[in-house]
Amino acid sequence: MQTQDPQSLNSLNSSKATPSDAGSASARSPATWKKTTTYLLTFLLGAGVTLSGSQLLHAQNLLGGEKSANGNVERAASQVAPLQAALPASNDSNWISSVVRQVGPSVVRIDASRTVKTDIPDVFNDPFFRQFFGSQFPSQPQERVERGTGSGFILSENGQILTNAHVVDGADTVEVTLKDGRSFTGKVVGTDPVTDVAVVKIEANDLPVAKLADPETIAPGEWVVAIGNPLGLDNTVTVGIVSATGRSSSQVGVAEKRVNFIQTDAAINPGNSGGPLLNQRGEVIGVNTAIIQGAQGLGFAIPVDTASRIARDLIADGQVEHPYLGIQMVELTPEIKQKINSNPNSALTVTEEKGILVVKVMPDSPAAASGLRAGDVIQKIDGNQVSNATEVQQMVEKSAIGKALSMQVLRNGQPLSLDVLPGAFPVENNAG
Image (cartoon, rainbow, N blue to C red; front, side):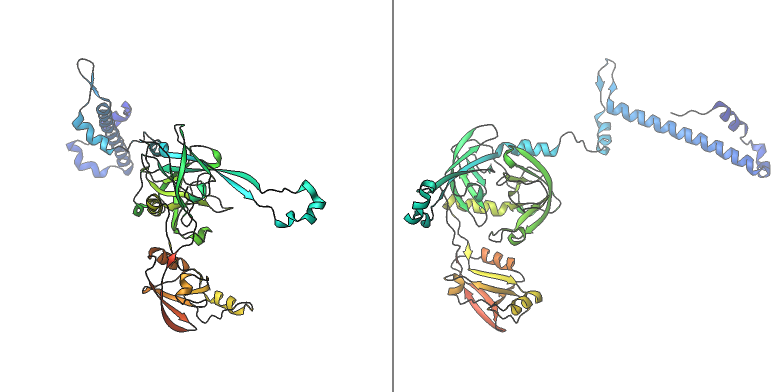
């Protein structure tokens, strides 16, 4: 609280006008009025500070409590409530730590090993070479054991675990280690190389389960947490944001996959594969799966809706069937057209500048059986205009095996309608 100088107060009092002074006030000099005004403002300022300090002290007494006659601290709840509502929200806990505490126990380490056999080339079994090199050449196929580490998270209390297909692909043995230190031998229920999703089962009960998010809530700029075992460093936590959604497989550099990836700048390293990407509520929004070689601060995850759908099919049937046409295609641009037409080794002549050019039709494929040819330019599928190869792939993925797709194409500049019957994608099932 500020106080006034007594001399200043006396000066101010001595300069006050009395009723008899009213008629002569206009005769005073400007300097006198200036001095009077300054003193008056100083007095009002001091009074305002005094009042503010009194109110602040009263508020502090309310927040800190008022002592009763017996010395106990009491608080006027009806008066404190509106004051507390005006204060900033408390940040007593770190949301990242809360997410890790909530989901960390459901994240597992997966150690997989596979035996790789190397056959001896026939030429080395020829007696002619043997007489020169003798025992320097092995006579039996060579075997070696490859080991790898990945991550996963628990889908059900009875031990169903979701991970990446490439983590357990072809594995002879799978060992699953929980955060609490317990280890179990895992069985591969099924793998889907097309989406890089796999399910492993361990014999256990009452396990902590990771909660799956609503995929519609995922948006760029959202905070995310990745938990896994990168580079063999167990229970590692990294943080970032969703950088983008809907990254196509070709953009990520894995054109053979059928996934629209979530892009994140949360650090993803080898060993993170199969681990969860989590939102601020501790819900799984994706399965960490890929990094671009040489990139910094870029990682990719399979969206939770795709991963959970594939996992359900693997649990039910041990495999997933994807619709398949059997074509290679490219989006037409004037530059692409010029390159194809100017290539003397090209068997194609392109007249169109827009659409999806069928570059190659695989032998004995559904596309070949339906009459689709290299050089055809796809314009529409089931009446929907397509502008890039990713859209064609997505429409095929959403179709059903054995159910015809109506396709409008241009062949040698002439419109043509074809009914193409998708077949099952030719992949091996590596269920153990």
